[in-house]
Image 1 (cartoon, one colour):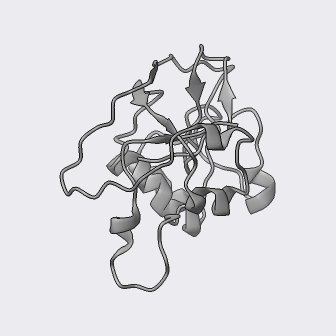
Image 2: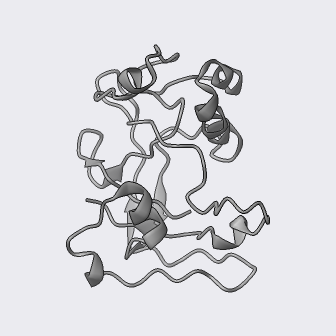
Amino acid sequence: MVVQSTNTGGDLGSNHFDIMMPGGGLGIFDGCTNEFGFQFPGARYGGVSSRSECSSLPAKLQSGCQWRFDWFMNADNPSLSFTQVQCPSELVARSGCRRSDDASFPAFQMPTNTKWEPPQPTETAGPYDQHQSHGVVVFVESKSIFDDDDDDDDDDKRKPAGFHCADF
């Protein structure tokens, strides 16, 4: 999975970043309520607690919320290994953000093999217990950034795997 970290924090320990996803909780800086004019269900830090609660979100957020329970397996502050790379242009186009030192990292290259092999980690981010006073910022557009909207089912070929994009 390739992600662009736009928010890192030390509130839950060192070297952690937030993964924003629909239904994951609003966190301390709630921009979603104003944007959607809707009181979001679930806990402020942690969000909804079951896949069925995703149906109570605005329609355009439901598939992203369901992804959290289906693919992400409702992981709460998981540990992971990552390799920092230059942020792919597809992510920069969506976020409008790029690190000033982005060029100092190795360029991301789409894997060409059909068997996924994890990269050698350069750092490890550890798990942290979620507390009432700390949380995960949780809002993204649920449409894939790699969806080219042409309905030819080749979008999965563009989805990178196994790297972490730069934080800001």
